[in-house]
Length: 167
Image 1 (cartoon, rainbow, N blue to C red):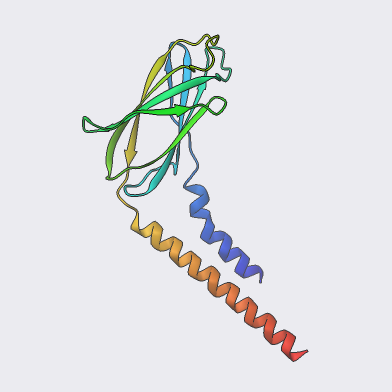
Image 2 (cartoon, helix red, strand yellow; image 1 turned 90 degrees about the vertical axis):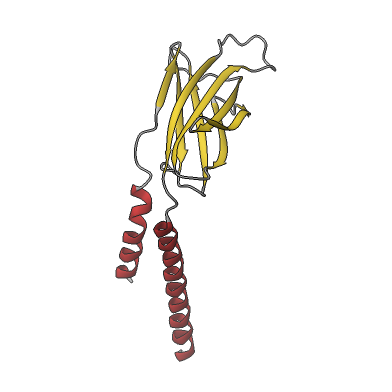
């Protein structure tokens, strides 16, 4: 039984290791904007989450801000002024990159219309996102992992059923 758990652990390790790393941070007027991608390396045809976090010149979280996101590839604007509303100091959106290549994400951050007393000058930052070709092998790996788990569960059920029957 310990061997089964060890094999299962080894099968999951590439999934854990693939998400390690640092996120890009851009600075404008002393404010920092951090982009986090999930998955960290987006693939063409798969949904990705872009999440932005904003800090002021003192490194404190900035709240009550709105953002507008443009996404372009090879000079063609794919998303124009997509309105993002902050959740605390973070924005996020889901996006499916249609093809592999270099994309540009331009985020403009400004004070929220709902909080007129917020003292925050508008800033714009640019992030470059590399999208990999569709990862067919990862999909096959996940299918194989699912089948292996199903077979393992089926074997455990049969084993426990036979054990009950013999008692």
